[in-house]
Structures are given as structure tokens and as C-alpha cells.
Length: 215
Image (tube, rainbow, N blue to C red; front, side, top):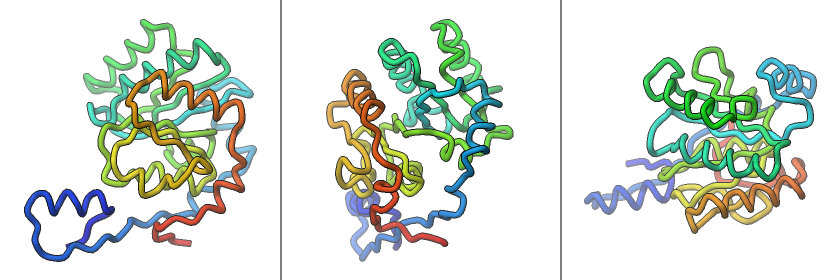
């Protein structure tokens, strides 16, 4: 049996798997993680992201595990300190009950100019990842987190809660920060530190990780 991470392999064992389990990390197509600077600026402009904003990205469906409400809470707290930030969530159905609710929460909090939920219609996840500056992973559980792997390969630092498989990707502070406290204030503090002293993209990209790369 194959598992996508050591965390997933341990879970299979806990569920009663007695035979061997091999870990096979998923593939990442690195060619999709490159974007010209002018294309990045155009995408930001199309989505109303002001020039010079530091863009934090999260991607996934609208569900309790991915935790879009935690994303909005973090956005609200960080924007109170650094109004030059912008938050983008890629994916999810904005026409669903959850999507309508989240958009109304953003509007009622007055965050609609600084928090974008793209929805899943016409939103290119890879383009947005390339156009972002960093990733905030708000998930509670991840078997691996391809978003984290792709972000690091694309040269984007990651702040993630201690949700599982990220420990197999984020090896030290040169690629990201893992939050053990699950405290949103701690997340904001670490995000501000990255905004004030961002990692050099070339340094992040040179990190070697176990992912099977498709070149």
C-alpha cells in the first residue's frame, strides 16, 4: 500500500494496517510554478490588489478543516497592524451557502478591499500562487499539503499551523514557520516578521525536498 506522507502512513497503521506501507510523495509540475513579472502585476490589477501590497495566499475548499473563518480572523488582525497586506483565498464555491456566508462576513467586517475569495470559476491557482508573496496555511489537518510544497518550490515562504504533513516539507525557518500554539495572534506575529524581513526567493527555491518533481 502507498501513502502520500509519513503522517498518512502512521494513520494507516493506527487504523489497523499490518502489512508494509510505502511512502510515495506526490508529483509537482514545477513548470506551472513560474510566471513573468508583468503577468503577476496584471493578475493583481485584475483582482483589485493595490500596487505594492504584500499578498498572503491560501487555497482549498470551504470546509471546517481548511478553516476559511480562521483565515479571515488572521487577515483582520494582521491588517490592523499592516494595512499594506492583501489576502487571497483561491478555490471554493462562492455561490454555495458557505461561499455566500464567507463573502458576507468579509463585507460586514469591512475587509472586502483587502480580502479576496476568488471562487473556483476562472481562478488559476498556479497563477495566484506565483503572484503571491507568501502562504498562510490555516488547515487543521493535512496528510501532506501540496500547497506548502508548491509554495516552497515557487520561492514563497509558508506559515502553517502544526497540521501534520507540513513537518515533512518545512524543515527549518529558511522555508517556513510551523505554529505549535494554534494561536492566531502567534500566526500574525510570525507573518509580520516575514513581511518585515522576507526570505530571498532564490534561497527558498534552492531548498531540496523529497517531492517527486516533474520537470
